[in-house]
Image 1 (tube, rainbow, N blue to C red):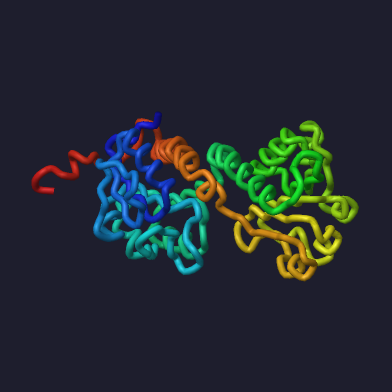
Image 2: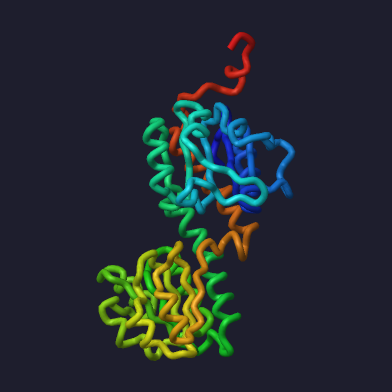
Length: 309
């Protein structure tokens, strides 16, 4: 378990996952303040601040939801709106770090202006691999709900052999599906072949799309354009797990009469408890790594509250 004793941590916004995260931070020895976070299931040791600024005041780390901020600088919340501004982040400790699952230009610019370290938790391999489990389960659930046939013996194509794509392909295999995987690079196709998944180059998608029953996309850029969408059967289903706007021409899919859904952020929707426990396992380790084990130079809580300071 990570040792975060002596650190003051602020958690802004979020959903049920953050309650589990806060519990993990407390177990690691941190003092936690939160704002805009659901209070159901929140441990009594966590301080619910009256404002975002109060929660951030003097914090050594500011944690934003995995979804990060939107283009206007607002974080996803359950009860109270939270706008992440430069003035708000300035209330944290000068040596603080900011953790966000998605880094928008506005957040990056504010952190750079303040000289604050910005940590993109979405790039952490441990977090991404563990999150791929509820993501894959959620994607399969959506496919089951959208189709009149079983996953077993169906033809499934997974676009992108990344951390989520590989987990999803393996689960589909276990359910008895015939699985294809599309990868741009030879090493990715080699990994798919090693797993017993039929490898496809993105340049050759046109040859396999007509026989597909379900297409899962994990690539956060347009990969299924109009011409490719129109190669699919009208009975096909598309589940797009990429962050908005996804990698599918949804207008073309609607015109074609194909059921297509954009479904980012599935862990928090289909398995918030597990997803929260994943955060509680990984985020404390990331914070400890950022400050350096046994070498962080932050004022202890006792020192901060000595008389005369």
